[in-house]
Length: 184
Image 1: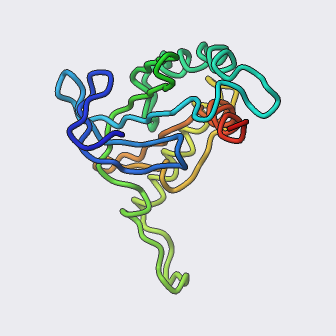
Image 2: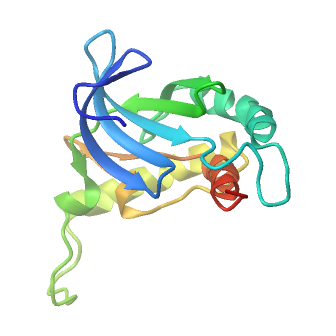
């Protein structure tokens, strides 16, 4: 069981930020160089090493590692919260992805009017942020062959710069979910 102060792959965990079921945990952490990072821990199997059709999930995850390597190797792009590194430990049954921590979510910076009504047009900063996100989506679609999820938790801010984060993981999530639905 992970907890604040725990260490996993040279990351000192400080705060759990989210969890999806039993298989994905998101932590704020410090890396070995003292940088503030986000660590996404994907538990690759729980009940068994096989999905409900008896396919070897460890092998299937190993087959998508080149895609993960590609995500980590992408050059820095404006508006993209790049993945910094990954660690795959099949014996310990997890895959970790790491990216830089960004202090704000776009949804917190530009809250929706509770009534849903707008008395005036969008703020210029709001429009700029979404233009940056749109450019980031274009850049990513040129570099990865996967749908880019655009959900509030993936839209981040640092100062006046908007970033799209946590992209390119849909195939990995699908495989892990198959393992959780497998025999147990």
